[in-house]
Image (tube, rainbow, N blue to C red; front, top):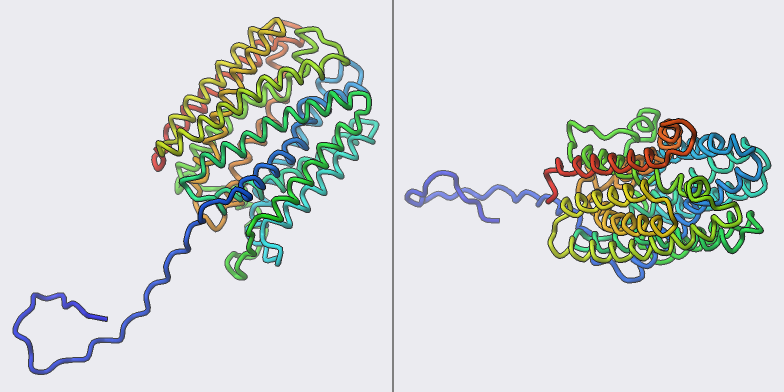
Length: 440
């Protein structure tokens, strides 16, 4: 290895000194993931579809119907809020904790597969408890198991994007995977409608879809175990650290978390309360609401697909993320405003179409943006789990604060106030993301 002297060259000396031994080269940085194969993208998408069908079908339709079966009409809103809130709090805890454990997993199956498979089996057991339970505490127990297990599996799927997908593909893959959330809503609404006379099957069949999805992903992903000794032992301190990424050291991560949280506050206003909106404001009975919700979901998902494909293609092509997050959040806010003023089913459908197009744009770029601001690639699951608190926490907080908005002006049905609140949250979320500096 040639040695270049620091001083300016002078006359060559008659005496030469041997060059010092060459220093070993610094290890090359670990290569990023190669292009994602079609099988891998399909696996991520199918797993997301199944997990979200497992979790969203109860949130959208079946939990409300199950609560209505066993709770008097005047108490059903509060009971549903209790069930959803407990599950969402546990989901919030499960995301980063399971993420930290997954990052450390040294199993020969890899560090993601055990949590995919184990999580979905726990979620299915929880759905069985809901289907068979006959009181609110049993529903709370079942939904707690379903949320913990489902979110454990979801954390592993989300980590798969920074693990296995290169930067130049992330918006398109994120769009494809994110689109599955809305397609799962169609499947869930369709299953709820098909099994309206057998509500237990409306809980269990989506759980079987979730199991099938994660099994397929496990078969096609090239998972690897964590390197032994690469992480500190999972102590109580590490447990606490699972919930924290310093906003001072990683401000872009913090702004992305804030933006995601606020946008999902708006989204949760719809996913948690559209069943009661159709029943209370538009006057549909228990036997009609599943069918009407299925029609609305079909229209919304068509818009989500268009938004996801368009947003992913344009964002990857331009290399920009923030303008699409800004635009999509504002479109979601417009959809919420339309829903707030809807007093007929056609107006409701128009509102969810606008809402769905904005959600599709958002989902196509949000995960790609999140992957770009992760503090450490080696702790992708833990950090994505922290970000996923921004998805889960609104599911807990919105049912807590919603009754206050619904009660504005007297009564319990001021959905206009609730959806306006969600629209304002989306606008604030769009503005928060604009403070990110490391991503265009």
